[in-house]
Amino acid sequence: MTNNSANPRHFLDIAAVSQADLRLIIEDASRRKQLLPAGDKPLAGKMLAMIFDKPSTRTRVSFDVAMRQLGGETLFLSGAEMQLGRSETIADTARVLSRYVDAIMIRTTAHDRLLEMAEHATVPVINGLTDDTHPCQIMADLMTFEEKRGPVKGKVFAWTGDGNNVLASFAEASARFDFELRIATPEGSDLDGRYIDWARGEGASIVTTTDPVKAVSGADCVVTDTWVSMGREEQARGHNVFMPYQVNERLMANAKPEALFMHCLPAHRGEEVTDGVIDGPQSVVFDEAENRLHAQKAILAWCFGEAA
Ligand code: CP
Image (cartoon, rainbow, N blue to C red; front, side, top):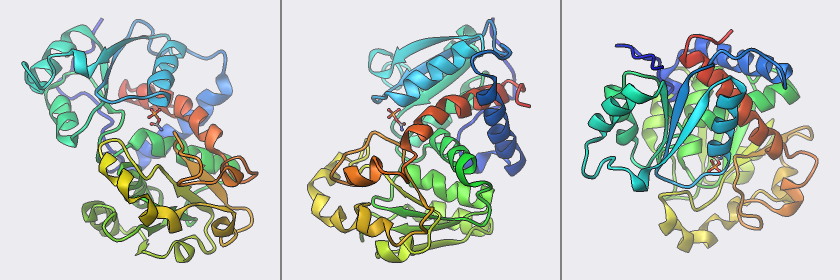
């Protein structure tokens, strides 16, 4: 049973959703986490198509389990095995899928592919990661921080490493959730300035530097990610450039004693983070991974007007 609408409620980016709705999603995610394993089934009879142009463990499994726990079902679609963007336009694929399923989650390369899908689908479209942004990850990250340390408002998040798609969504979130973001990246690996400009325009406090110690000093949370993001594999040759940005025990010592360490995973141990940090008492990486499930249940519910 499809739920076609002229104005489906998409979850495409943090910047595209209001502060009130993002807060509602975080609160609904926390409520749904408490309901496990019971809870209501607001998506009974609904089908989510999950299109993956790129590999995934967490996103694929957490969306699949989320739909099942909400009473719905999923359809896994490999982008490589579809006509999508090759012998058929993305717009036409969006129109066709909208006749079969109730929502579409897509992990793809160029952000334009996501936007084209959303423009032409008549069911909700969710961004499961593009080369530009990863909003579902950030919802789980902020939920995790607030579980451990209370409201993110006024807190200091330090990012060290590559200026990638996860960081872009962090920058957007710093405006929506009112936390300070300090970014340390090597020259040439900066975050695309569009995200910083937008967030600052919305009143966000964002500091950029090439000095990881400066970024991490006094931070409430230290965040990093792989130095070789999907779609930016050419950076594999530049690991030595990133080495000073590794989150190790020495760098973490500059943060507040109660600071958390986050990483969206998968982690390249010994590169962007040491075993001592990722397995240490400040690390919450597996809570982050778990909260992908709860946050996405709330995102799915929100898309269908069921978040509360
Ligand atoms: N963090 C994240 O998106 O993980 P996957 O690539 O495994 O989905």
